[in-house]
Length: 205
Image (cartoon, rainbow, N blue to C red; front, side):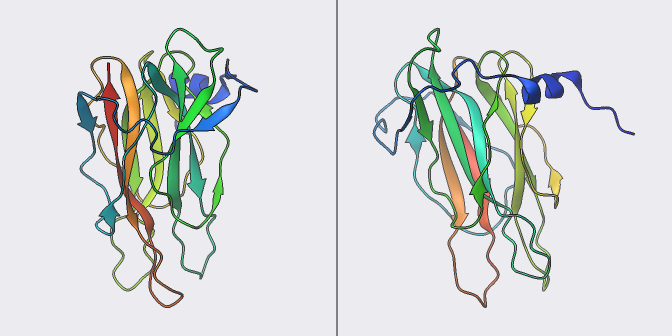
């Protein structure tokens, strides 16, 4: 049996200090926030277009995330990962409201529970992607994992297809404060859909 890193277990079992706090959707309200860099990976899927950037408010950083996943349907057209939602907490103030940011999400699946950093904020990520399958069903992005500023690696719900690529660069100051997704829009019942293909995140001081 393959050993599971202890830091990953810590991330998955951590109880959020903001449980029960009011969640507010940023929905583009803070698009004028300044970020100093974007981070990405090299193994994203080939389909779709980059959508729009959603950012946390000033002095807020992403401490947790959830994913919108379509469960495996067997012979049907599967899309796996459809969306990623970040949960932004004000630095040194976990009693504040929680802001959510998510960019564009696909139409299939359900949102998972939240996976939180035990301490600190999200700073880097890996993306699990299925390579093009030719005449077979494509799913593109299947799962994501993050590294926190504390060093913990956290991974929530995900699909079973594909492989993880390398880690993105890390935010060197502050943490992840925004997201932009690359989405393959819904076509119709006779064209293979893949939904979320790639994602990039933004780093703020």
